[in-house]
Length: 480
Image (cartoon, one colour):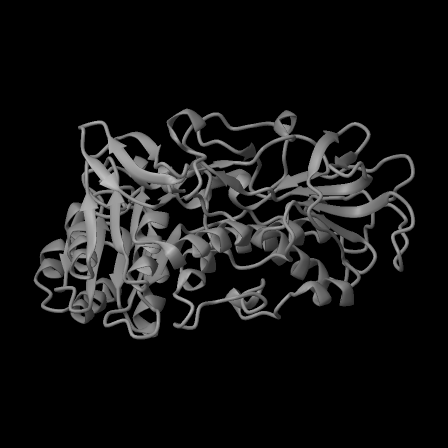
């Protein structure tokens, strides 16, 4: 599989006249990353000035807030401006546990607020109040002036910042209205409100069509099986998760989904979504003339970085998103970008990329804030990581949990029979291990994957191919 496959997945503050650089953390020989600051009211934010402003209320914003707290720089200094009504939460839950049937212990807030996904405190709204962090809910930024160092929200609030962190994430790609993309019963999932709307449909659904064979498609289809619904996945590629899975890996999962009653339609292009007599979506029309009956449709065809209104900061036309350096600094002094929206240098593979994944959201937030607040100048050295956990609802006969680390380039060696384990190793022309995939591993086995992907050991392919079990294969790869 070519490296471009994974790339698709992934796709200096300065002073001003009334600010002084804080130099007590200056390290001799290391360039300081200074920041601007304003005097603000710690008790009630009485004036319009904020020392730090985060735009966006997603997972990256929550982890950034925690890092500010850890450095003692949040109370009375930090403001989060969010378009949603909830404090930051662990978004992966929305297509996994949140969609479980109501009688099978579905996930609900406040259970998965940031930062429980990484073993931290549950940052509910009271947590932000406790730490003196101002959060503006349901009040997105609509305009921005880098010269005046201000953002303006939809309610008309004008906020002057010292340092600005753009954490606006991504928005779902949608079907045009003219082909039925906005019909009642057609769903897209990016936030809790979207998931709640889908659950309302699932409670009364009989036939569900899921458009897209990637993360959203696989995870929503798995959840739908818990509702015992007639479920069909429709996608244009030759197999599911085509950006990561080899045809062989995909075949294993496709058989599993089919065994659970999911219909899979490969190589299928959408003509339109058609409404019934009640105005609600009733069927999916394919370009080959096939008609798929469906009273609920979930569209999972990717996402686009939410760059507006910050396009002037500098965009990356190749991978999308806002261009940043290895410290998450944009081209405009004092402005940073993190998470899904950031196009950053992927040091380990020497290329630019953009990653829509919770792991990167967490790590980029932490790295950026550490850069902003200290003399830290180590470049971000991210190792690509993807995972999924599905069919975990109560009563499921087979739970699935896979992880992948590294780059999916080169020849593949597959070991295991998917009962339940299977492992795949990507090995380049120099016999270096570049990526590794594992299904149903133990915690110890999963912990080996990032070590292997980062160290990229020389692998004896013949010896690896001769391994009789996944355990043996991992031992062979680890011992070389």
